[in-house]
Picture: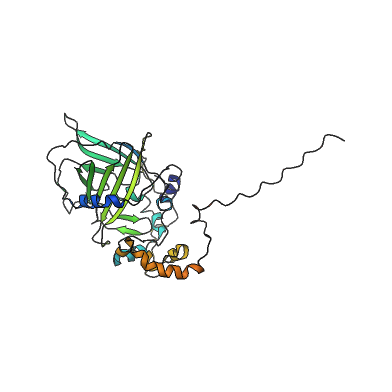
Length: 344
């Protein structure tokens, strides 16, 4: 397994298409499904649709978020509480280069937050080939998900949290609803917002015909969130299999010496304020919180934004965040050498 930081850049060249981040028309159905109790199913129930296959995650929307990662210090739209905000602000990306973290895996939330595709297949059992579970896999550093459909009980609260966590599923019409617990702590957003090991995840797999799959994830964390955090993503059916067999992770030197733990003390993180610098979003919005999730929050920002607008630079001046803007003109070609005359 290669280092974390290089893989997100390479993913940009491997995937294309469209990502859907918001689907207001589906939210009521999703939240109602998330509120349903997870009932144990007796025996192996038949599946109303076939989810199996390779599903490609397109990148024509949210490219900056999916590939190089979100802007440092941008937690707008995340229902973080004070503890979640303090933890996010202490984050230093150099901690990913600690030898102890080079082979640290992401949990199941990264299916929706990352830039990679999915492969889904059934686990069958018995003489009737009943589907006992659905297996979901992605890139090599994301924990797999086995969605058990046979009604097996929840592990003990004292059980070790495995990389694959624990998921049970049931059907609501043609929508597969999976409920995941026992996840390992991981990033909610790849700029320092962290979820705890008490977080739970409700994943809704909604087929849209034969060639599109919409996935809605509802994350709840009693430690760092005040409300559910919802993310929507769409996948296209791929004729090429998504690879899920990867070699072992190899610890390598990525620049942080052993024994060093990079982090920032409160108020000492130099990246705080970048949202105001690049996008003119004030700190009280970039810090997140439940109120920043809703459209009404824009009214709070509008007057301040319009007042300061005449002072904003009208051209992007930072190469990193201008990468997806207009392509600069190419330099003129060098002059061609004059051909020598063959006549006297």
